[in-house]
Length: 137
Ligand SMILES: CC(C)(COP(=O)(O)OP(=O)(O)OC[C@H]1O[C@@H](n2cnc3c(N)ncnc32)[C@H](O)[C@@H]1OP(=O)(O)O)[C@@H](O)C(=O)NCCC(=O)NCCS
Image: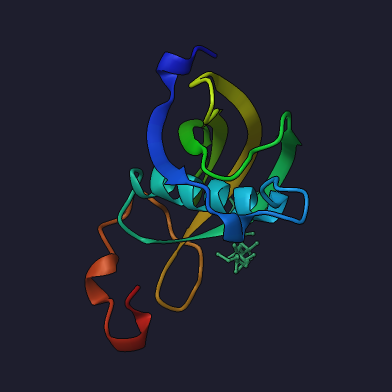
């Protein structure tokens, strides 16, 4: 798939708090970014609560270092009834050179759910209008 088929989901600057003792960013930090990017893509299919049901085939191709600008792009690769599967690619802009490296990719399946956390068709009418109090955010 060409990069042009992917849409921008997130751009994040890595910070020292994201790194391990050898100065590279924790895999779990990248996975959190991937989870958020997949949510952003899923949301474009329907304004509902979306939960992650599966994250598969995550590949860490190259390390990410502190101070790098990390860009996450997404593409929906499967649409079901209540779920969509999103491919996420992650690039890092190297601080010293400005070169961009493909550092990680993953495939994530997200499920649209109602306020009771039951799966609902993602093409059903918007359900985020009933967010209140502790449900918000
Ligand atoms: C997501 C969840 C609501 C699905 O419940 P469920 O009883 O499995 O629901 P269903 O069997 O009806 O499946 C719903 C959809 O998820 C898909 N799905 C279920 N398990 C899956 C898996 N392991 N991998 C990929 N897709 C899966 C089904 O194929 C179905 O998709 P479709 O409607 O597009 O065909 C439930 O598993 C859950 O609440 N999980 C925890 C979610 C969570 O807290 N995530 C982390 C924080 S966001």
